[in-house]
Image 1 (tube, chains in turn yellow, green):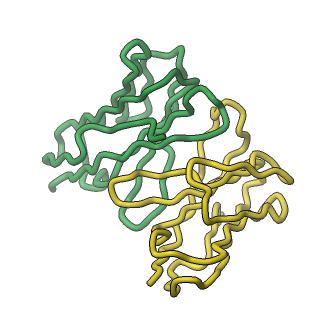
Image 2: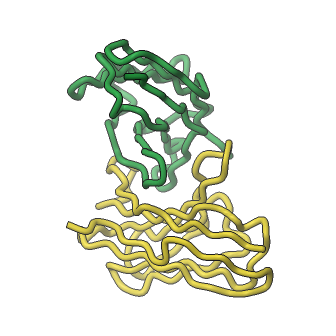
Amino acid sequence: NAGVTQTPKFQVLKTGQSMTLQCAQDMNHNSMYWYRQDPGMGLRLIYYSASEGTTDKGEVPNGYNVSRLNKREFSLRLESAAPSQTSVYFCASSELNYYSNQPQHFGDGTRLSIL
Amino acid sequence: SQQGEEDPQALSIQEGENATMNCSYKTSINNLQWYRQNSGRGLVHLILIRSNEREKHSGRLRVTLDTSKKSSSLLITASRAADTASYFCATDEGTGNQFYFGTGTSLTVIP
């Protein structure tokens, strides 16, 4: 079972470039999430999608957009990359989002460097 | 806002010893989860404890929750080199729709 698949695994961008991080899950989960992980900061929620057709802002949404393409796929877009967005990005999914009583399943991350 | 704070930030022990790490949080919660992250990998869910539970076990893992102190602890007994990883707690601040992760404890188990 693939679980949560993220592409690409590594990416280097120049300031001002745009790119889309892709995420797909094969567990038929309703909820999907995008996090960023920075040294000493833990994981911070960027956006989430509680169910197909809905998206909501998390803790650090500025500079990002998301699309819940269908139940399986949730993409994260950087319209104009900035060095402050250098980070490791994780996608996660869970069966339900209600009262967070479901474990989240994570992909292995996209390591993004912006020069 | 960062909800959970793990303590200590780093922990180094010998194989076979027990490892204890703590998590403190700021507001009321519905439940608290612990995750493990191996180097270069995503997080893996370990255990969930609900706000009305005080202790939970899963294999060599023991989690306690003290809602009056807004704290939780994760005990790994008889540690193995394979337990080397970072451990994170995550809470929902009672909202039910967002997770807040702590900064993690880096555990090194020396063979």
